Image (cartoon, rainbow, N blue to C red; front, top):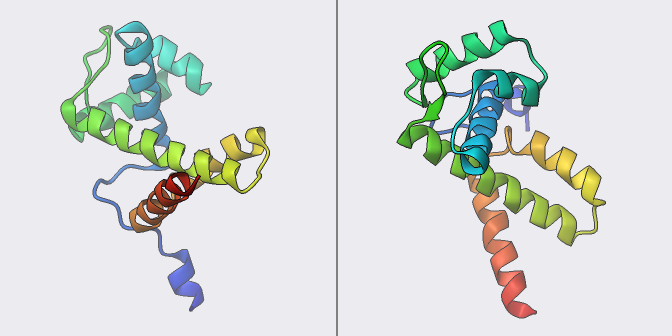
Length: 138
C-alpha cells in the first residue's frame, strides 16, 4: 500500500471532524441523562471554553445536527441523534472487541475513543459481525 493511501481518511456518510463528533456524543449523553444539554455543561465536559462551544454548535446547527440558539438549551435533531447512536455503536463495538482480546479496560476506553473516529464503517461492521458470531459460539 502506498504512503498516500495510508494518509487518506475513511469515507463516511457525514462530514464531521473528530471534535464535532465529540460534541454530538456529549450532547447526546446529556440529553439521555438530564433531558437537555446546556452549552456551559458541554464546555465543562469537553474541557473547552465557551467561545469554542459556540463555534462548534453553530457549525453543527448549520450541518443540521443540532438546534442551537444562543442562551438556550441545545437539542440534537433527528439527524444528530442518528449520528450519536452510530458513534455509540462504533464505540461499543470497539470496546467489546478490545476487551475480548484482553486489552485492559482503561486502555480499551482510550483506544476505542480514538479508533472510532478514524476506522472505516466496513471495518466496524465486520468487527460487529465477528463479535456476534463469537457470542453465539459461547
